[in-house]
Amino acid sequence: MSANEQFDGVSVIKKANVYFDGKCVSHAVVFPDGTRKTLGVILPSELDFNTGSPEIMEVLAGRCTVQLAGSEVVTEYGAGQSFSVPAESRFHIVTLEALHYVCHYG
Amino acid sequence: MSANEQFDGVSVIKKANVYFDGKCVSHAVVFPDGTRKTLGVILPSELDFNTGSPEIMEVLAGRCTVQLAGSEVVTEYGAGQSFSVPAESRFHIVTLEALHYVCHYG
Image 1 (cartoon, chains in turn purple, yellow):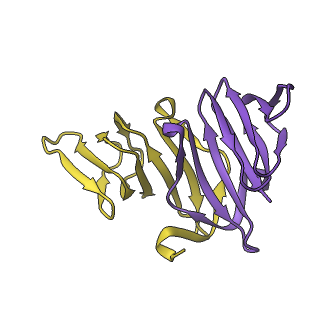
Image 2 (spheres, chains in turn orange, yellow; image 1 turned 45 degrees about the vertical axis):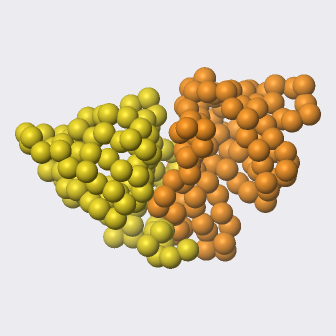
């Protein structure tokens, strides 16, 4: 499996994070330098997420449309694409198929 | 976070495994010796799982009842408990709340 498909030399938290009655499930990964990312799936749904830290959502598979708080623009993202969300903000996401992602913080 | 709550020095596959329309979502973890485990969640549901390799399902959180193929016995399991399933078999599981687990193979 290529380096692009996995993270090596990391810690992974055993218990998942379950949001929105399971429409979003993620596992947290901690890197040797203390950096934390989450790997997750958003099932087909329409959800509003709030951010604490700034987030970069990297789409691994699936498709979604995203509208950032305060914006009229709805943008579609697919595999290999990313979108950024400011700290203390929110975004509206519509997933038509299971969306696999890596969330990068800070 | 204690060693009991995370796996250290592992590789984790970024893309999740999604089964039963998302009622079961897991991430695969690979240890330095090549051992593979999955970390997952089963949302409240009633499902039948098939095994390839023998499996030990370690319950991290939540509760379930399990009936192994060919058995009349239904057993309840909660956090800290495990159950074993033979290779090339199946089990019927009922989860009344989100079940967090580690699946050990082989």
